[in-house]
Amino acid sequence: MKTKKTFNPIVSRIALALVSLSALALSACKPQSDENLTVQALPEILSLFVEVKPEGAVPVKAVIGAQPGAKVVVTGVIGGVLNPFTEGYASFVLADDALLFCNEMEDDHCETPWDACCEDPDKIRQMRLVVQAVDAEGLPIEQGLRGVGGLKELDLVTVSGVVDPQSTPDNLIVNLTSIVRA
Image 1 (cartoon, rainbow, N blue to C red):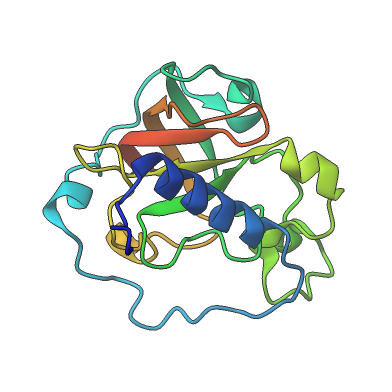
Image 2 (cartoon, one colour; image 1 turned 180 degrees about the horizontal axis):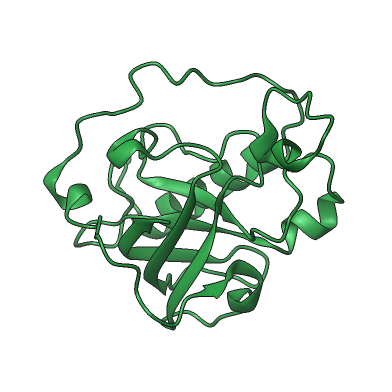
């Protein structure tokens, strides 16, 4: 007897979070091209970009441990991992700008300075979170964010959002309601 496969949104969110976090563990350095950095975006993604930075923004490390449903306004750097953008999904990793990124060092020789590879890995894990744009069902929108509005690695951004119901203390996920490049 064949069983019908059904779509489980909770499993989908967990899988996306695991994919995002597995990218955090990668250590190989391979630069991404900035060619065609500005990309066409879906209207629901473009509507998230705002001109004015919201008040009350705090650094990433200040929201770590926030409870699901909490509203947050956080400023950070797109990075903290080798591949901060999730290909095909509207999400990225946001790291605390207190981390030392390789481009801030005098002897910068790293092709991927956004991964903060010179920092202690435990420190990095405690100072980053996942930001995602979700649809009406709470699932990540199926379009990458790299290049949308010119977004790229090492951009300083301020995001407003709500902590996702699937967040855990080790994997904070913020559902994006607005973003502005600093």
